[in-house]
Length: 192
Image (cartoon, rainbow, N blue to C red):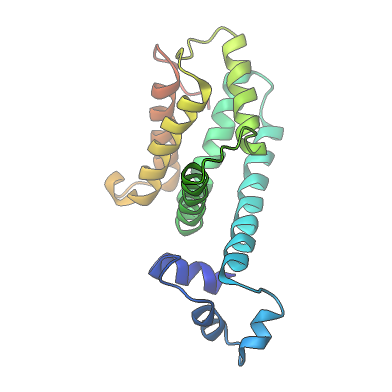
């Protein structure tokens, strides 16, 4: 999977063939790779699933360890997600682009997924809890808030050099503070 991620990152999905993956992974024959994966699409889907499991484990641990207070939990989950992305930029970029490709294909085909994935559902619930606790959350649909936050985080992960020579922890805190600026209509300090 590491080889496929490297090739997809360097050449793009369309610029990588199943034979490129086979050769880079050291499989001698096409049949040896085809016993594991029938197509490049299967490799990409398996890679996406593997990366999403790692991200969900990281964020899930943060959720479970956090205080039940909604703002504390939002900060803990945000910190974990941003930290994972900053520490794993290649994996984050692959997931982001792959999911965007899937959404784009659904739009072109006229299909729309009404059911968000488990992570998105958890974030909707968390935003609902923050709203119920009377924090000044923007009166924008939660899906739009998450889209704006994802754009900010994605750009920050891709262009980490913009932060200058600061620690990973400092980058994470700066991005989280900017996310709070998106979420709330008034300045809300980010809980530690």
